[in-house]
Length: 417
Image (tube, rainbow, N blue to C red; front, side, top):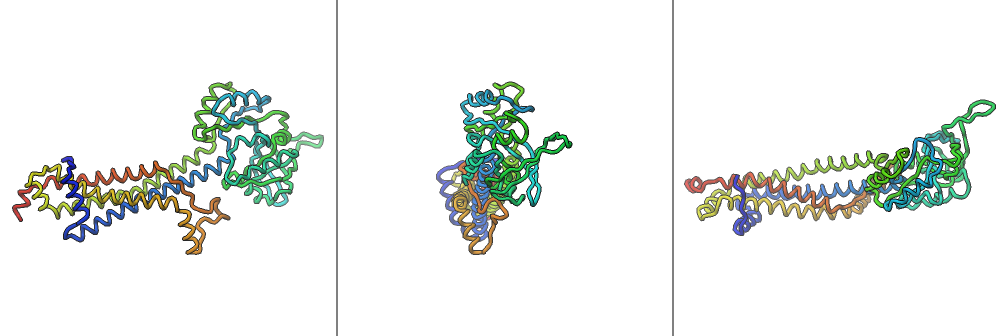
């Protein structure tokens, strides 16, 4: 294969071919189709990747607003957590460390029963290990400071139980109470003092009480289940906790949020990759159209190629003409596609709102979905990745027809002229 050589002559001739298709209207149509295919493919891919980034960021912000970055715990309840807390805070990357108690329980109301997760935290300091979510409704945890046996429920869980702030619910803990009359499950009435809603799955199963209330419910005395941790870098929490693990005694186990929620985010990343692969097929088809455009153009320009070769142009220079021809079409499509993709990514929510108003439909019904509009997060890396891949596909697409052009012998063409 003859490698193309790019000179000012090959550039200007390739530019002329790309702007003026000559007598063949068919070549012009194929060129326009190649150009529009590249624009459409690049714009759609950038927009879809931005929407996927937006969904991932939205889910991360909501779900991790009530998920600690890490936990230190033991198989048995911990009597004195203060040394463990001080040891955790000695790491400069750990911002907060607070005790917790967490167990699975059964809630009962006048309407329905439901299993749930009950977490006991220190209302004054324990909230430090959670990220403030956008709605700021974590302030309701301050209500747990007033008296024991108060509870804060997830909004979906409260709707399932049919309770509201001010109502009481029965909680059954998995402990047997021995009495003269026999063995009975431990049941306690708790007053609902607040509801939280982060727009994610914890709304349907999570509940919170004060650390003192949890210790009383589960008969722990002053013991706790472990220590919850907040780091200064959410996405580096695993390595920070791994460093901490080397310093504490082997009796304690350490887990990060990635172990409890990581599979969900891994699924989102995999979905993003699969969608990107599918949309890259659009760019591949556009690049294939470039091959068709150049193949037809080479057939039409045989006499021009013969003249160039007779005037002393090398075969690599002829290849450079058609590579330039194909790349100008592709680059214009890529640049315009990037422009449209950026505009769509930055304004997708407004565009969808306008369409909803015109068509009188609601794409994301807030009563059904956790979100009410398209989230979008444009990343520079995605722009470079998409445009770079489109450029490489286009470049390799031009090599075969350009090499065919370079192999045309002027004697054979001029013989029939």
